[in-house]
Amino acid sequence: ILNFNKSDDTLILFLKDLIKQAGAICIKEQSLLKPADVKFKNKKDLVTITDKRVEDFIVKKIRTKYPSHDVLGEETGKTNFSSDYLWIIDPIDGTTSFFHQQPFYSVSIALQYKGQTICGAVYAPRLDELFYADKDKGAFLNDCPINVSKTDRLINCVMATGFACLRANLKKNNLEYFNKIVPRLRDIRRYGSAAIDLCYVACGRLDGFWEMNLNIYDIAAGVFIVEQAGGKICDFKGELNFPEQGIVATNKYIQNNLLENFK
Ligand code: 2AM
Ligand code: CA
Ligand code: CA
Ligand code: CA
Image (cartoon, rainbow, N blue to C red; front, side, top):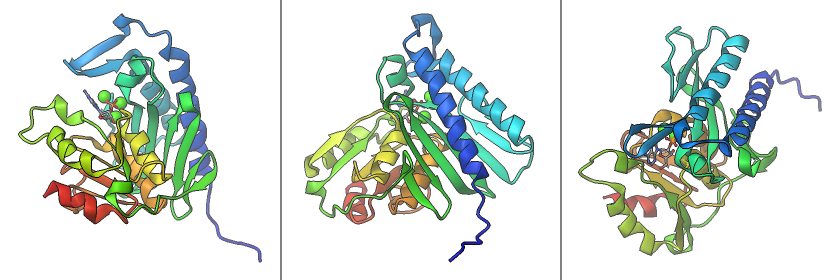
C-alpha cells in the first residue's frame, strides 16, 4: 500500500547533518586545546573556546536556513523573535571531559514547536554515535531503531548520575542520594554528559539516570530521545517539573522503585 503521509524529513535531515559537522569541529579542536583556551565561569565550571565556536557555528547555520526561528544556546542565551520554533543548543555537553581529552562528551540540539519538542539529536563525535528522534517515528542510534531496557528490579540495574549540583551550595546535594541508591543497584556509571546519559537510557545500555541542577539545554534533546524510545522522565517527586526539581529518566519499569529513594 502506498503511503501518502505527508511527513517531512527536511528538519531531521538538516539537524543530523548540522550536528555531525559540529562534532567534527570538536574532534579537530579537542587535541589542540591549551590551558589558555579554557575559562572558568566559576571554580568548577569550565568553558573552552571550542564551546563558543561550536555554538556560533550551529547558530549561524540555523539562522541561515531558518532565519525566523528562535535559538537558545548555553553560551549565547536566547533570541526573542517570538517564533513558534525554538532550537535548544548545548554545543558541548561534558566540557570537563572534553577539556581533559576524554571521549564522553556530546553535542546536543533539540527543536521545539510551541513548547513541544519535535526533533532532537545528540552526537558523541569521538564515539561516532548519533542518537536522534523525530516526532512519532521513534528513536535511533546511527539510523538503527533503539528501545529502553526491560529491567524491573533495582539490583539488576546499571544507572548513571552526575554532580552538576556541586557547582551550587545546595542544602541537599546528590551525594546523599548517591549513597542511598548505589548500594541498591548492580552498578553505577558517571560519564559527565547528561545528554549521553539520557541517550544510554534510550538505547538500553543504562536502565536509569538521575541528576539535579541541570538546565534545559543539557536535557532537551535527550529527554525527547528517551521518550521516543519508550522510557519515562519525571522529577524527584514523580512530577513533570524537570530539570528544576531534579530529573529521573528510566526504562519506566523501574521508575517507582527508583523514585522511592528521593522521598
Ligand atoms: P556542560 O558540560 O555542558 O556544562 C554533568 O554532570 C552535567 O552537568 C553535564 O551535562 C554538564 O554540562 C553539567 N555541568 C555543568 N557544569 C558542571 C560542573 N561544574 N560540574 C559538573 N557538571 C556540570
Ligand atoms: Ca557548561
Ligand atoms: Ca550541558
Ligand atoms: Ca555545555
